[in-house]
Image 1 (cartoon, rainbow, N blue to C red):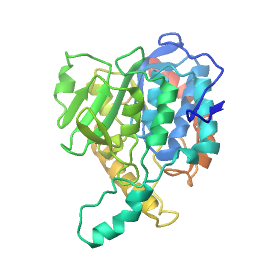
Image 2 (image 1 turned 120 degrees about the horizontal axis):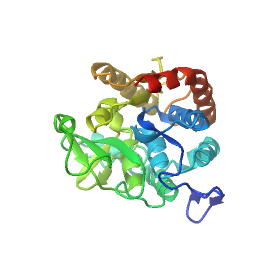
Image 3 (image 1 turned 180 degrees about the vertical axis):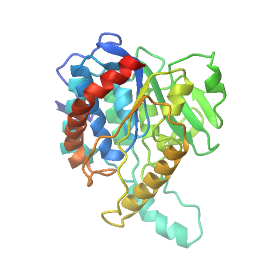
Image 4 (image 1 turned 90 degrees about the vertical axis):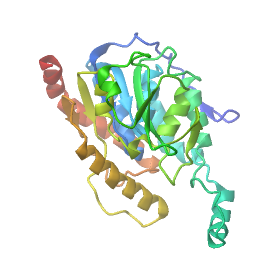
Length: 317
């Protein structure tokens, strides 16, 4: 049910506490892809039906939303309801920076410093995420989680995780240009990792100015492996590249971002034991909320078909 005063929705289903789900001993990595990230909920639905939910999870960009809500203890049924809600009402969480947009062109033409940090503030969406996670911190009572974001001041990837404390694994210490962080509100972390440059305003947090985790690592398999996970299944929801539907600033920025993420992903080591790549609607993009439920359903159907292979791989490793 939607609460017009708080801008949040509440579900009658009881939220599960960490450890109550029937989970398996492996890590799941969820890649970014705008509205296509809803497919991850379909993947989790199929895994839940087989008693194969992961006990550790990682995600970047839109994948961080699903990973963060899962780690916070949101039931898979609740997550499906969130997807259905956003399919119909997602645009109500878009809060454009009207004043910044109006001032941008005059400031640029006059050679002044521009005040526009992003087309969309992101405050409404962050408030929505905070209502879903109940203000839970990553250091609180949540499942094993890893979410990257990028600090545009230093150029470093900031990895928020509760998978280890101050005694970092040697593999984590070897990561160049990576800073590990163990504190922060889940909703702040998720919003930071999902803030596509130029589209969403960067998020100020713990002295950093953070933007989308997909800038450096859209499928953070190597980061989860560096944190000590040896059994990893990854879900890539990035689309096969096609020209933009139009040449608007959002479509151009998102497609440029997708090209960069694809090239970076191909350069990184492939440490997953299985890569899942569900076929999703071509029209699904950054803010195409109307396609989210279809993406979720397609992710479910694909994962059900892949289940025999998933089981074989988990048994083998």
